[in-house]
Length: 246
Image (cartoon, rainbow, N blue to C red):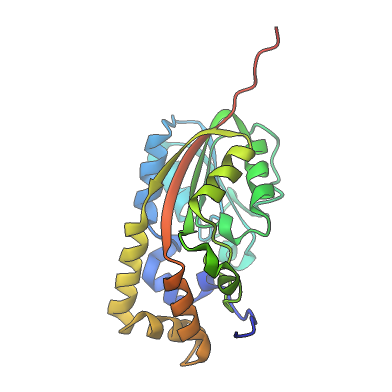
């Protein structure tokens, strides 16, 4: 087994940035836009984008929907490239906002990068107002037996901690969200893989270019990810409303 030595984050590589554009994830702004419409948001509602990166989704939510949109990201380098008063440095598991502050929270391809997904989801529930919407998009796997090998990928990426469908749903419900609607959007991940093959010749070559040259890690990464049968999903769930005291 290859020793796991993390040298870089996938989302910071120019290769991924060229592949996905400024949102750094499958689905692009179109998916965020669709999610916002599904949440029934109205002008003036406060929303938060966790892991906002360059801030493209924050700008879209504010400009197209007239929302009071905020964004946080732990990576100061990304924030500095496109600074703004509504985008601040913070970690998903310790959000610098009061409880019940937001009508909706978007976390797109970021939850799987956090050190404790349960803690992070609990923090999402804290800052959302009762009845507020959680929009969660991320990678999931269908073959859990490859989980230990995924953890040894020498790269910060969503595949390293990816969970299966049941585990994700249990975490969401355990954090105080109800009626989670699961949508399989794996075709968006397939589209990106297809574009990577078109641009680089093969997925092995794509990973080799990510790692900076032909190396055992590129072949190992490609084989393990393929074997885990990854997919992409969206969950929209509501924070439970507090029961009125009699």
